[in-house]
Length: 360
Image 1 (cartoon, rainbow, N blue to C red):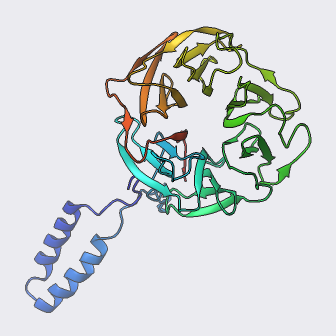
Image 2: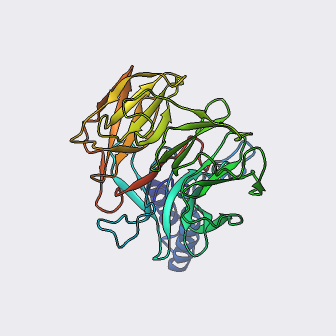
Image 3: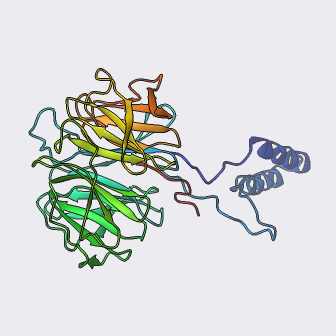
């Protein structure tokens, strides 16, 4: 595990303690034994940083995932009888090497996984569970214990995406074409376009974007153009027209907003099969990246840091790290960046643990 908050006692400290006890008490076996046990117990205490007044301050508990870690959700609504089937697991990976760090959660035989997001207080991971009871669960980073965050008003056919938006509310796709809103206290919110059911195909992602807005990415059932809504009122949508030759059915799977306000879209349509970059008004600036050998069918994405994207594909179970420079992208020398027969198959969401996560 990582992030250990208890430092072991120093070897030199024990050595000095041992010498002192021997010099003072070696001439008397009884006193020597008593002093040795007493000093050993005191020398072996935790060494903790101290405040100005001498009070101890705990440096924190060990955590299974921490700031910067990449968390992958392998799941979706693909049943386990389908081959090859997703593992329905949540796992963490090293952002520098792409190596597996921890299996964080493994769904039982009745559960399907899809979306995930760090909680607004930055103390846990929230994720959707579709099962006999549909709900939003939480995962504690210290114990990996599972809790229930949102249960009411979630009874759709297939739990899918979720996101925590700027006003502290949660949006949860409780079915392929229904989205519920919950306030920061997890109470179901209605009115102003919520519960959302109209103009939705199969919801794949809900992404928070700047300007107190969110974007819905959908697939199948004809018109799958992304739609932008206001956080407070979802009664009307701004349809994102990228002006692509595939028209209104381009299999646009995900979007990432870059720090400078531009957007990157993953487009799986065979005419593109690439990442497209737009300005802040969604006007296409060009093809950011295309590699049909290493990254066929780019789908789920996340921003790892200021200049790097992680992009996963359904087709070969790989995730690639793409560095953005201007309007072009380059693949990492480590390629594939993440490739695991269990943990990177059918990635439906990616979470990069934010700065300040689980600080005491």
